[in-house]
Amino acid sequence: KIQYIVANNRDELNDQNGEDKRGYAFPASKMVALYPRAVSAEPHRIPDTSGLAGTVAHEFGHIYISADGDFRNDWKKTFGWETLPDDQVDWLKSAPKSCRSNQPERCITDYAQFSPDEDICESLSAVVNNPGVLDKERSDFIKERWFRKSKSVEKETVVERKTGKEVQMPKVPDKVR
Image 1 (cartoon, rainbow, N blue to C red):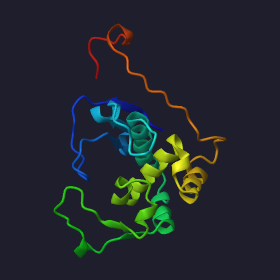
Image 2 (image 1 turned 90 degrees about the horizontal axis):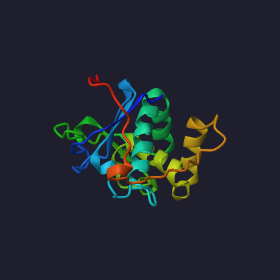
Image 3 (image 1 turned 90 degrees about the vertical axis):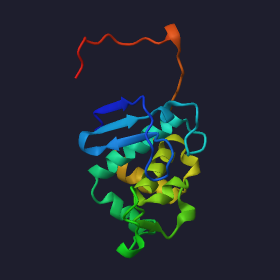
Image 4 (image 1 turned 45 degrees about the vertical axis):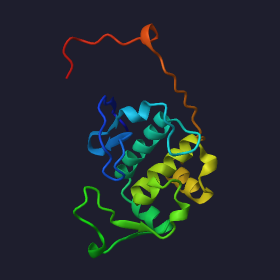
């Protein structure tokens, strides 16, 4: 279960691609952080998906992976991911690429080609937001493992931008920890 979704008002760089982060998952804290790019008008990498909807689903994927120890290994075997030998990994990079896909053309986005975890999370985002763009084998793999108790994984997401007096903020105590 996710306990917190936090909105961060400062940009941070993604170590993997050098772009501004959209979000970040903290599995141990059961928390997802959203960065300004996630709530911008920029669409997500998954076609016909808002930045917010795509980012939230993607980051939830990181939480799910951490809770299901076998999922990553089963995904790697099923979808052709291999661990690179140490001498082929640039350990000096902030986010060294330590895996390679034997089927990169099956990855739903270029970002999914970075690692099995990103492949899983981008695929989950597609299952939730635009299932028609993901190949059936990947979609079924996720649905069978993570949505087996659910009758439907199709969710409607609505994103609205409100300004000025349209925004109603909750009352909070003077001191918040």
